[in-house]
Amino acid sequence: MRHRLIRVSAALAVIAVPVLVVAEPAGAANGPPVVGCTTGSSCSVQLNYTWPTTGSTGGKNPVTYTPPPCIGVPVGDAYAGSQVIITIYGASAPLPAPTTTSPAPSAPATSPPASASPSGSPSGQSASGLTPQEQQIYAQAQQLLNTHPKPAGDWYQIAGNPAASAGDQQVCSQLPPYVFAVGGRLPNVRGVNVPPETLAAYAYSRLKTADVVSVAFNPRGTSDTNLPTFVNMVIALPRRAPGLLEVAGPGSRAALGTPFVYATAMTPNGTSATVYAWVKGFSIGIDPGSASSSATVFNDPRCSTVSGTVALPRGRTGFKLGSRYSPDQMAKVGVGQQIDCGVTFTAPGTYTLAVSVSWDACWSQGQANPVGPPADGCNPVPGAGGLQDSLMNPPPTVNVREIQSVNGSPSPLPA
Image (cartoon, rainbow, N blue to C red; front, side, top):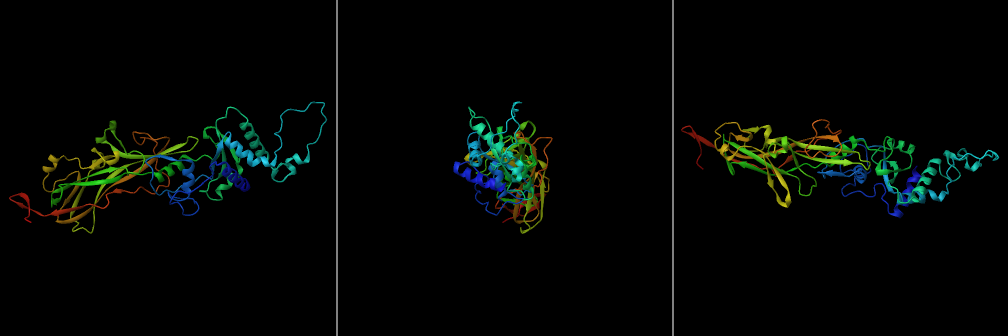
């Protein structure tokens, strides 16, 4: 099998047809592919070469998966691919294809030449140097090249997956070295077609979630002890990230929806898998190094749903998360009262807050559903290492001053 791979690489280079893993993208030079790789490693190169992703992509999320032992590498269409195969096999002058016509009864019985007997050559090869399987491939390439108009379909070289272990790749030698497939529909042989679970893991590795682009406090500027500080944020996709940040919810109303993104990976034969990631929670943390840890955090579930949109530069759309209180409602909140999203500080000082949203993910077979993850059949991503939280960087700070009660009404202390 190895000498055939070497010969096809040379032939493809001459005819300028792409070969397996022609180059690694920037930042992927970290050694040969291995099982259990993550985005950025060489194993993702061959996957991306044949199975691109669409949607919100560009991320680098840790995921471990078992790659298929064999892959189908595109060689060319019915004409270009056939010419490649004829160039490879033609030098051996293959024997004519066997005929199915029976000899006439009067024809004298003769024994086949010893040179044409498969048993006369090692490994079942004939005197031509080609195995019967290779002769069949060669004959099919000649037939396709002489068929007009050009037949639909492409040739694929069945090769060992560089992301699989050497032991797993042994099964590839038992498969035809070349197959002609219409519409990329390779033979349904274990290892040739990529399982949807593997596609899901790869799409997960490339998935890009939203960034926190701003955090706002109310009151602005300086807060008071024992009165709540309301917290809001705006999330959006990074400026250079393709794809869409959508909202899922009853009736697709943004005011009721949960933000989500998705990424889809698909093979040439049409097998696809989509990974969805949605905002799981809204979090407010206080840096232990702040002036004091005397604070109460409020984090209602509705904080992680969209309350409106914001127009951002370069045509992007931001989604508001956090407190749903109106300015009038905020003004009526008294000392020690509970709110939906924010913090009440009980001691003065300067506080550093970690305001973030967390993400969860699942996958389903097929293309993306624009209204959100399916209610049924969306499963945990196998081998997923977890998505990083989206947080404001650098973290915002809040200055808090102390207030005292005068005749039952709180008022700020004099500066």
